[in-house]
Image (cartoon, rainbow over the protein chains, first blue to last red):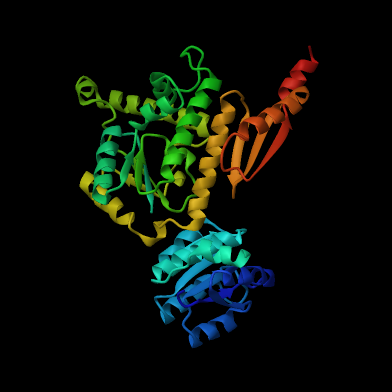
Length: 138
Length: 273
């Protein structure tokens, strides 16, 4: 099995991190959850993550700024944007800035796991979703 | 991967441009040739299907409203299903009217280049006569698009880009659009793929319902399908049951909801009898 993927999950709603962390950990990933964008950025400056999953609309700093900071720090990191206020212009802007994917809330954990598997593939790693999820069920 | 949808009054130049872009980018082409496939798939009369794309419902033209809407729904369902495959240049199928809010779809309107009247016909016409005919063609298209999708086909707000063929050469248009299709902002993403999948699902449900019913609007979000319908109160249960039964045949529906509205006009008319 390949090394676990290092993932940072940022969403100012506590429930999102609480719900998604265990769902992502099931597919061989280490997940660090943040609600405060400033603290998340501090951590991004300390450590190179494989994948950053970030909400877009937050109080102190928005997800687009986080996207810029992450890609400035490490261009190999894949950034997945999640938002409850999805709009065509926002989605296009995020992709233009270099986001790996853009998901509208609400979504099922499975949907995010599929995107993480795609990001892992793009990073040269692999996440075999079916095998890992079956193992967890046993 | 992105999809390019072109719309134009000038079919000849539109054809030329679309085919050149598809060839440049090695994308598949989806155009009027697809009508025969749709006619075969849904067992429709090909000539009537072509007519439905050009005329509004009329008893005189032997195109009743119910049949017209059903024919259009066949085109919509067929085209949307095909657009899910991506990497496609689509034109001549009115897709610009029913594919909206999908970020990996670039919609372009080509205006001007007034060759919509065959050159042989133009020889005997004055410039004023040509203008008059073009204005009439535009009015007729607007009438069609408003009746079919409640959208003005020529309205620039419907498109990402409008290109004037009187000012830009064909090869420049091909080059510009081929380059634009490579922009990261047009990359397919989970959000846009889900949007298109929902639209394709709604179109399939609408198509199944319009085969036997009228007055149905269908929307889908994350696999949840909402059908809105109108009927007289006494027909309410029967209509809702029929919708549930028919829509239930379509694969991919997560949850189905039927919203019913009272047909006030018919109710009022009946009460005066």
